[in-house]
Length: 261
Image (cartoon, rainbow, N blue to C red):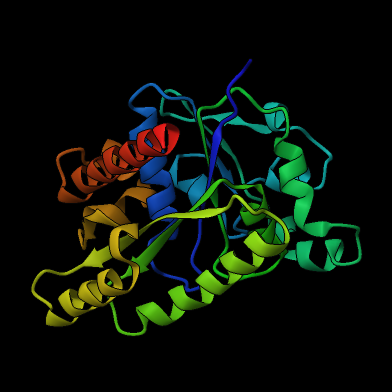
């Protein structure tokens, strides 16, 4: 029997926390281990698409046409410059999904339905928009686990608390196996007492659900997308690239523990 891919939503209701950066670089690091990986760019801004050197979809096959059942995952996935990594690009049409699907029956299940029977990948990462609408709900309903990037700044916990409520709601009503895979602290400045304090607060609250790996502020990380590359291809030796490689190892270790648990 073919193994089903493990599906992750990378989500935070707060914008600017490193969500897309985490999606792209985590997926790249796992693909570098010769695992077949797919990114589904479900954010209308399309930043994950651009970050791997592809163009935002202007018509054609994209995450909107997959979500709405017009196209399949297999026919819409595009190869990237990274071996083993495919992407289904975003489209501006995603902006209208909340209105378009609102009156449909079971509008939260469209992505789950689209991913049924998909066996070509080991891992699928869904880059969610920074809002809790039908796009994020579809991602959470279709996923096994959620990875939550949290910026090391004041009010960080507030955004996470809101997301936890959403995850619990989805778990209760639509997807009872959904779990929090982990929280990754991003944009860490070791010189800042506030950043250290935020990490301690999040660890106190979430315990072992917080990954040990912390992603530091590193100029190479935000530079990389403008070159259409993940940071690992843009500057492999940078502290940002090495941190995401370390995070990928930690994610896969948890996956092994899950498989044997």
